[in-house]
Length: 232
Length: 232
DNA sequence: GCTTTCTATTAGAGGCGTCTAATAGATAAA
DNA sequence: TTTATCTATTAGACGCCTCTAATAGAAAGC
Image 1 (cartoon, rainbow over the protein chains, first blue to last red):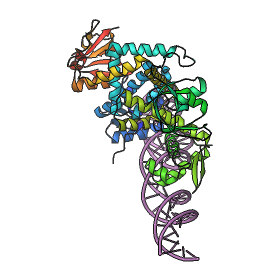
Image 2 (spheres, rainbow over the protein chains, first blue to last red):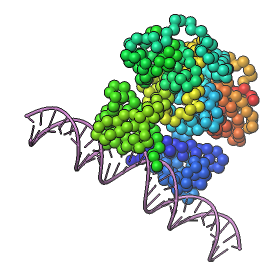
Image 3 (tube, each protein chain N blue to C red):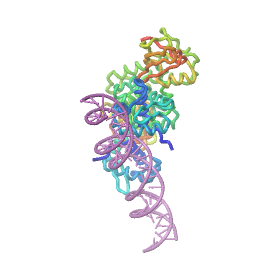
Image 4 (cartoon, each protein chain N blue to C red):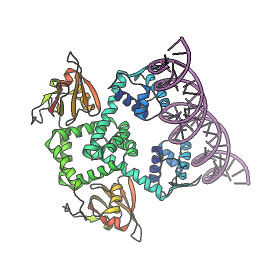
């Protein structure tokens, strides 16, 4: 039975692909340097790749990608580039962190997600709306955050989660808070447009249990007060 | 030396967190069902988590998250939700695929990327431009792709990569092609706004070597002709 | 041509994460 | 109370991926 193509093996393919830009074959030494592993770890990986028909490997001589191997490497690299652009250009993650993240994420991006990203960048690049949007997003990112969510006034009646009864549901409009509390709420998925449902409240009123997406949270009073929602 | 928090262990934490919504403790059986692994695999994982102080585990009795464990689980879940929203709401990946992808990606998203995503959703949700943009993107996605890139006329002089000399560089405007060729080019990172440099051309003209981001590609004539760029 | 040096491979080990099979503990039924 | 059943744990195995140490092969220096 031929082994399966694991993340590590994909990384090896990618490395070999990169190395074959310069020479037309790759050496074990170069691979081990590039991946920062010992040479002894490379040999068994090459054996497995050869067994799968992805590289043409002659021990002590050379290793080259086969056409399938090249295709596989390109598939992974395409994901890598897309992710790096998403992280770097759109989300403004610093370059080296974007690179690291892309490396980690590239192995587990489905075709559907890949297609979505491709369309996204096509849209950004092709349409005037796309370009403008990214600029606006970045401008908005740079400007200091308003203390109490005054930047965008609510255009519909808003309620604090603190005032909802168990069973009531709302769509998050904004988090009217700053600092650690705001961060904690955002981290937990309490982003604008997220659906929130109050599950139960302690008799004292203090811990309020809510559901956000799949997660269930216990909120303290200050936290619940800060969340402004539109009733659903 | 306490073990490190691996992806698998993060998954266990997440599962325990989900289970503790219903009861206030989790049983090995439930965990093994939820994660679709055998019960025998759960025990050693719990031992490691206990050793790290992330769960409170009494053999044959119960397992509960410690405060640190809960924090860790929430951290991962927050990433999970963000990714699922990005994939589902923005990129329109089908729900179950979005869920699977989010599961796989959640373990390797840096804080910086996480912050970027949070800001992104905040912007989408808070600003009128944000909402409009997503709608426009989705409308654009649904409409059939024009056969020859006629939707957006070039607003600047465009050149085919086929006509560039080695050393010349361009910014991709559009891919004037359809089907497999288009797909291959998009997959390889030849998206609008990508930087392209012609590296060398075979004497016969046929294979044209180009660089796109970090990747190097050999293009056939038909492929090179289809890529329209603005000179840089 | 012989020896040194560099490079690649093998051998053996360890951690992780899963499995199956066997065992032990707890609970329910008789 | 004793037995049957269900659940959790242990024991032992395997694959993956890495390491270190030892060895083998190739290239360079003398």
